[in-house]
Length: 319
Image (cartoon, rainbow, N blue to C red; front, top):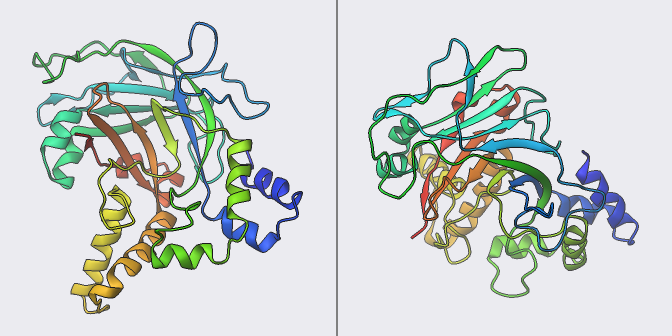
C-alpha cells in the first residue's frame, strides 16, 4: 500500500516543493480495477502495461455463476423476485489501496437487477433492486442453488445466471479530467490550479507510476464515472455531483445559504469536494449489458464500519 507515499517520494526526487505535492495529492484517488486475463496472461484493458513490479496473477474474484452464501442466508431478493448475482470478490486477495478501507478478509458479493433498478427513476425505490453483501471470514458457506425466477428476467439477451469468469486486479490512479487543461476551466478549478504550477509534470508522473488503462470490468474506489452528460458547463453528471446539488438545495431551503445565479456553479463545485471527502464509489461495473452501468457509493465512515447495507445504488443508462 502507501501509494501516496510512493507519489510523494517520486515528486520530491524531481525537486517539486512538498507543499505543492500535498495539494496535488489531495486530488489523486487510487482504485482497484479487476478484469479477465487473456490466454497469454495479459490483463484485459491494459495496453500500456502494469505499474512497475505489479503482476496480475492473483485471482481476486469471479463474475457470474452462482454465489457462495452463508448456510443460513436466503438468496437476496427484490420486489420482483431474486436479484441477479453479478460478482464475488475475495477481500484478502484484493490489493490494499490508500483511501479505500475494504475489509481485510471475507467476501464481497454484488447483486443487481440493473433494468429494474434504473426503471424505478427513484433513488429510494432503486435500493430494493440492488444489494452488497459482505460475508465475513470463517462463516460457513455453500454454493447457492439457482432460485425460482421469472423468464425472461431481462429485456436484453442476458441470462439470470451469467457466464462465469475469473477476475484479476491492478491498482490505478485517478485525476480530475480538468486538471491538465490550460483553458476552459471553471472559476473554482482556476483557483485550485493557481497553486499547482507543476501539475503537468505531476500528472505525467502519476501516469508513469500507474499507467492508464482503457477498461475495468469492476472498479473499486477512484472517482465516480460519468455517463457523458454535462451537468454544468464544466462538470459531468455523476451521483456525487447530484448529492452536492441536493446539499446546496437543502441549505437554501433551511435558510442557511442564499445563492445568486452567478455563485451557483462555484458553490456547487465547492460542495462537490465536500461530498468527495465523505463518500466514495465502492464499486462500478458493467452489469452484463453494455448500455447500463452499475454503481454503488458508500460513505467513508460506513465502509470503515463494514455497514454495506448503507451502500447506495445509482444505476446509469448510457444511451
